[in-house]
Length: 281
Image (tube, rainbow, N blue to C red; front, top):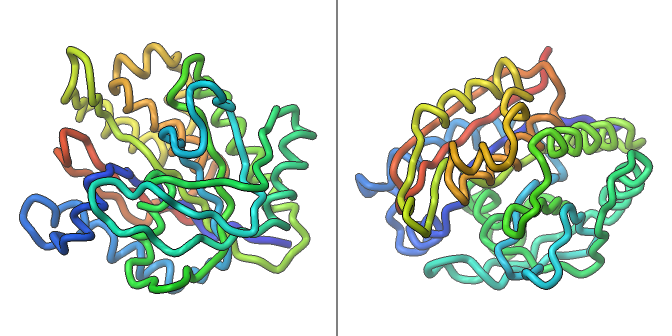
């Protein structure tokens, strides 16, 4: 049977791509953020995942306001990117894992989730940033196939935090029931608190961010008690991207060991965080 080796959550601020492209990782402004990743890369070297399920949100590249599914799962042989944000060169196409994709889709539909299945799919910086941060030396190819799981955080009504937790749990069940000798990594991409427009542009809620990160350690469904309106009020219009963190962490299961955590503000008027978990022993 397949094994979930762990879960990584991280912010995907587009400016990160520009910093990578310009080699600014060791500049004082950026280093506190990039310093959060070497311990995770070392752990990944030991965990040896051979597939990744990436929970992310699309920013208008693959879906737009006229057609915005609540949940979508990629089932393509590869995923090309056309939006890296602020200067990073377009990256090589990401290999897909259609067998794992259909395993997830079939299980989710059987679990009463209405999924949009995408046999062609473009991915933007929300998908590519975590991959580049975790495997910065990937050249013309990526070290493992991927399955994108897209959650709508753009066009209201958004799925509730509770529903995203349920989605994550169902994905975890599907992976663990997959009769394949595979090692799967879960990635949650988005957040933390930030608002890019309106009267609250530049809003950051450090206290809530840190409470939320701690909840993923000891009470992963804690934030599900808040409505979407309350989460937007607490974290900002775009801070609601923490839904992807919740889904990825829920897929890992209730018990987990925190391997590493990093929190830094600001990056481009945004709170940026990173966490890594292993399954409970």
